[in-house]
Image: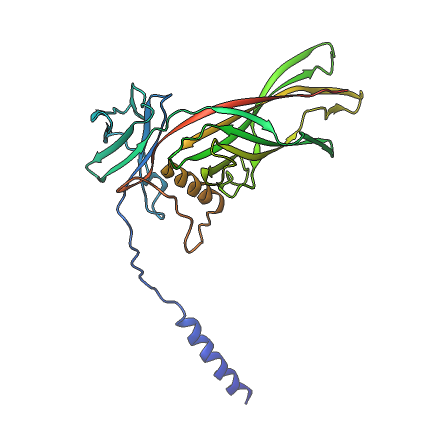
Length: 324
């Protein structure tokens, strides 16, 4: 009786193992390769752009490569004049600068790809009218580090009658004096430049520059007044304010004298605003196993990438430290 039971169990298991493998052919629809344009331009710089091609996700990495033999024509729609950009092996360049307030159209042709095109305008320059402290600069000391917070308000010229879009970035340029531990009379000066984390509760903020929060994208819908006023906060760990301390000799090895903060405010059109926000979302939240990964918004017709004008204004604020 035991033998019969054994055979009844063994045969179904054997059949299950024998027939469990199947091969399914799946027809995956793929788009043909397209031209990818990378072109950001401003009135302060000469024309320069790069081209490459798109590739299927399962193709080898080498299938996506730069394009150096395309015909690139840019037309100034205000003057109805055109010029062609030659390639130097990496970039397509032209020895003239875009003109503020003018609209430009790019046309890229290549025998292996559909013709790509886009249109964008260079914003007019604007001034930052000032940066003020909304509250006192906060310095907190914890676990050997100095934590800084600055609540600030940046005021700038707002172009009336236009939809305006901005990106704010902050960097710190600090002066540090290093003391030679073997010879304290030897003091060496050096500078450091680092990006600063910035945040804002303004509802007009689209993106906060990824996990590091080193930029803010916002529109003018929720500015504090018609002249342009935007509140934000800077957060930073000042590692070498006075914490580079030699525990053997009980002396400070390095101390900070001052910091100068630079504020870069970039005005852009809606195309660049949407592209930057979607690209930030893609790099921050991209999951290769997601059913629908984040999509990067492009303004290139019959292609991908970005062709957009911008203008940037810079202001600074200096903070001095006193070490007792």
